[in-house]
Structure formats: structure tokens, C-alpha cells
Length: 379
Ligand SMILES: [Zn+2]
Picture (tube, rainbow, N blue to C red):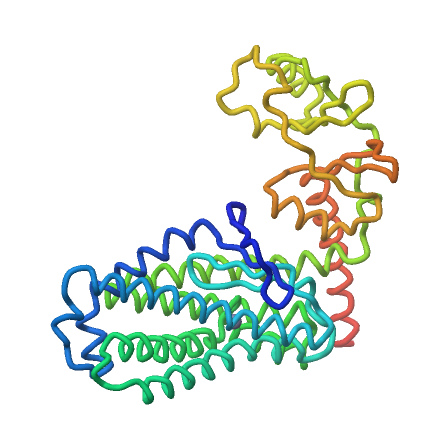
């Protein structure tokens, strides 16, 4: 999901933190929005509107501080998830801050029943604690320090809203995960996800409708995001169930057709037409140099040599799991993976099409066996 992220030069509690490009755009926007709405917030937080506070650039400076505080709060919320997951022996690959908040990418979901719910609830609990902390701090700051009063009041309010919003029972929000995990106590995991996804989409629809009615663009955006992400979540669950137990070796194509780096784009297109492939490894003297696909040829002329357009290849080993291979391709935006042996020799190629074909075959098999199960149940 995050292809244009900047990784921070330090780790938090051993976890790498990345800032997605969308976050870097939204931060100044938030600062501006909070700054321009300052009088509204002051009324809401019952702070007497100090004229010095709404003068010149001061509101926007306060807005920036509030926005930074908001995103640090989101980061701490994600650390709450990550540390709870660690308690189950699951590490967090990365925490990413993006347009709509934070995401902690866990290496896997612990198999313990109900673990997902515990990890999910940890985030909102952290946010409620933060809200209380900022609220208490506000009580200590003298009422004359209107700037401090505003910042602490804002952060207390926003953390409480974060907790409540995240508890909405819609995937991929924390509330949706809690719902799915609780459903999975009584139903098979796939069915639990399917039910949770339907509820998520209904909720997204209702939120979107509300957004339209009250004319709130942000709400519509969030509804849209929930709808898309809930579908992705359902797909992911079906995927991991379907690809379970498969490794790259079972699916890859062994006879790999390749091209030399000096071949022209025109020659490459001819070869593609002839062999009906849309991606090739680039080899010279048996050495793997890169990967070239149809998607790399934008604005190239027929004479451009392949060397100028190839990308560093995405590599995997024969025993890499099919799910991991698919995730790697999706993460890096590649549609094929090159498989090498322990000595770095090219032994196969795996395209998204290969994976999808395997998926179709397996899911047909799964649903057939599922049907016979239910008929025996009824008998
Ligand atoms: Zn959360």
C-alpha cells in the first residue's frame, strides 16, 4: 500500500517508523485547518479568546504544533498495538504514518484465539489514556497560558475521538478487528471475516451517506477508505487460506525465456508478441542484470535498449511461501518474481498470472469441498 514512504533514521522500541508521502502532504494541511478553525476550538474548549492568540501567524503555529501532537499520538496508539503483539511473540515489521493515521504491520496474526481482539483493543485503550493524560496536564497549566490550554485541550479531545472512531466495528479499524476476532471464536475464520466485511461495508455506506447529508468531505473520504480496505481485508483472508501450504517451487515456470541488455524495445515487443509473455529477466553471460516488463516501457522509443529501462529484479527462493511471494510483489509493485537457487542462478520465474491461476484452481476446489461438507452436515 505504501510505495512512497520515507523511513525515519531511528527505531522506536526496536520498530522502524516510516512516513508515507500522503502524510507529508496532510500534515501542513491539518496545521492550516486547525489554525483557521482556532476560534471554533477555543469556544469548544471554553478558553477565553485571547486576542494575541488569533493574531497573525500564531493560529497557524498553534495548528502545526497541534497537528504534530496529533500524529505523535497516533504513533503512540500504534506502538500500543505493536507492544501487545510482541506479548504474543509477534514482531512488527514497520509502523507507517499516512493520510488517515497509522498502520502497524504485524509479521503475522498470532494463532491464539481472541489474540487479534486483544491486540486491537490495545490501541484505543492507549488513546483513552493519552486523552486522560493531556486532560490532567491541562488542569495543571494556568488558565492565562491560553496557547498551552488550547494545545492540551485539543490533544485530549482528539485522542478521545481517535479511540471512539477506531472502535467503530468496521474493518480495518480496530473495532472491526475486535468484531472479527470475536466472531472467529464461534465461526471458521473465513466466515468470520466475510461477516465482518459485510458489516464494515454497511457501516461505510452509512458513514458516506451521513457525510453527504451534512456535507462533510472528510467523512466521505473515510467511508470510501473503509469500503475499499474492508474488501482488501476480505480478499487477504481468502488468499492466505487458499495459498496455505504452497511454496514458490510448486507454481513457478522453470523454462525461463530471457533477453540480453542490448536488445531494443522494438525487438522486445516482437518477442513479447511471439511468445505471449509480458515480462523477461535480463541476462548477460548467464549473469542476472534485471527485469523488464511491459509496464517499464512507457515513453520508450523502439530503439531504446532494454538496459535503459530494466529494473532491479525482485528475487525469491524456491521455498518462499506463495503468500509471501504475492505480498512482496504487491508491496513493491512488481508483477513477476525471479527465483534463484543458493548460488544466485536463475531457476524460475513466477508471475502474478501464475499465482492467480493457482488461486482460481484452489478456491474452486475449496468451495467444492466446502459444499460437500455442508451437504453431509445436513444429511
Ligand atoms: Zn488502532
